[in-house]
Every structure is written in C-alpha cells, then in structure tokens.
Picture 1 (cartoon, helix red, strand yellow):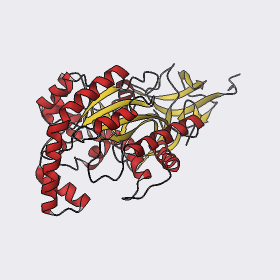
Picture 2 (cartoon, one colour):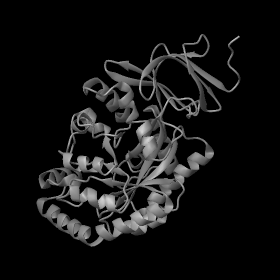
Picture 3 (spheres, helix red, strand yellow):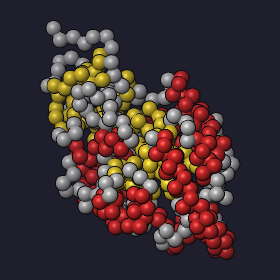
Picture 4 (cartoon, one colour):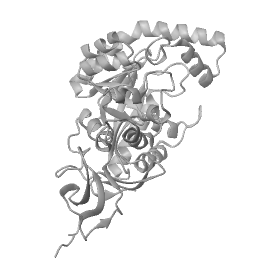
Length: 382
C-alpha cells in the first residue's frame, strides 16, 4: 500500500517546472528535502494540473525600508515592519530573500546607519524566533560616493546575515542617470527641489563622488573578499565601469544600463541581474536599456523584484510568453536556480531529488501567475 508517513509531503497532479523541462507528475518530500519525483500518484495533495515551481530566490529588494519608513520622518515598529515585509515577500512566491539595507546616505535621507542596524537586528530576531515565512539574508547597498559609506559598512559587515554587497554611485551624469534630464525629472519629482536647489545638490554630489567613490569601492571590495561576501556592481554603463568592477573581483552585474555594459559583463563572466519591473513595464523607468532586450540578446541571468515583490514571478512568466527562445523552464531559472547559484546557495532553486523542498503552487489566470500556496523546506508558509 502506498502511504504517506508522518512528516512527509506528497504533491501530485502538478505541472512541475524542472530545470530544463516541464513534466506532469508528483513529488515526495521528507525532512524538508525532495526525495522522489515521479508519475502522478493517488496519494497526496492534488494541485489540479497547476504549475509547481521552485521557491523564488530574491537577491535585491528595496522593499523592507518602505515598511519601516513609509513616509518622511515616520517610523514603524521594526519588528512589525519586518513581519509585514516578510508576509508580502512570501505571498509573492519568494522563499529566500536578500533584504537590501543602505549604507551611505545623502543629505536628503532622514535615516542613518543606526537605523539600518535596527532593521538588521529585527530580521535576526524574526529568524531566531522562527516567525518569518521566507529565509532572510542581508544585501548591503553601498552608496560609495556618500561620505559615511565606509563607516556605515564597517558597522554591519560582520553580521552573519550579510552575504551580498553592491557598490553603487548615484551621482548625477553617470550610470543610472547618465542623462541629466532623467536625473532632474526623478529628483525634482521626488524631492520637490527648485532648479537652483537641484544645481547646488548636483554639484555637491559630484564633488563627493570624486572624493569618496574610488577609495570606498576598493576598501569595501577588499573587506567583502576577506569575509566571503558576494560582490555586485550596480548600474554599470560603460566598458570602463565593467573593467573597474572586474578588477575589484565582482561576480554579479546589477542593472547594467546599456547594451555595451551588459555585453562586457557577460564577457567578464559576471552574472547579469535586471529588475522584474523593467520586464513587466516594457522598459526602464530611467530610460536605460530594456531587460527584455537583454533577454532577447541572451544577456540576462537573474531577475530581481527591485521595488515590486510580485514582479519577479510576473516577469518570468512574461518572458516565457513573449520572448522567442525562452521556455518557461529557462525563465523560471532566472528567479530560482540562477540567483541561488550566484549567492552560493547550491541546496535550492531547483525541483530535483536532494534539493530543498521550497515550492510555489501557481495558477495562471488571464496571463497573470497567481500564487496559491508556498512551502519552505516542506512546510507550508502561505
């Protein structure tokens, strides 16, 4: 008789999205690990022919800060903020998340390094108490042109939750905002500055970039290598930017802004990460290179939710539907297997025997993937 033992999980009648194909069948989990993949079974939870995909692995989400600081000078309880963030992350199908925490702040930010430490502590407390649905790590977003960047990085670098750091420089006239028109539109819309105030702000930010960006990049990169923290570049726009990243030992190219930078990153062996919102919207909100264009050119390895958690899943299904040559299996790899590999998490990101039982039950309705159930290590969390 085919029975299910206590502590086992059997899912059946599923279209399982494996690394290289989609198969109909069932799988068995024991002790949080996939132990068997086979034909449909009479036993277990019937998924009604819906998709079963690996749990998503998110390397770059800025979403936690919006829960902690939802308005200027407004602060939410950090524990409550982490819980709310975690619930939204898990409901988007994300079972492993790298929460982005800023180090290095400009004069218009009302949050300092101590508050970043508060958020890191709240994540650690939630993990220790076992009340978080997703597995959380920390990604340090290092604004290297900010005077306090290195000091703030040193406060957080030894936290064992930190596994990834990106080196950013948002000074005007380069990288994300190579177009000053785009920079003006973004910052005047966000900060409501007059033309004169923006000009003064621009001059100060450029001077800080000249003074601090180079030394901070080198010091943080060296520390990351010593600590085993994966290093990412951010908004590279030129071959020179990529060569600088390569010299620092960078492994992930986050959000290259031009086709030139993406091609150079691929030639250098870096994993290319782009934002799900870019795919869903059909282009970059800053006017930079389209993620879909990179996918069509085979220059896309990882998709991140960036600022919309659900965009990871939505963008993967969108690429499978709209880009010739990208199968559903390949698209799902962009949000599961490939980011897991880039982060050094070889135990997850794929439906295969011996891998972690992190799954998402997905039904597609009117072209939109709907998350119905989420399991992490064989335990239902949504």
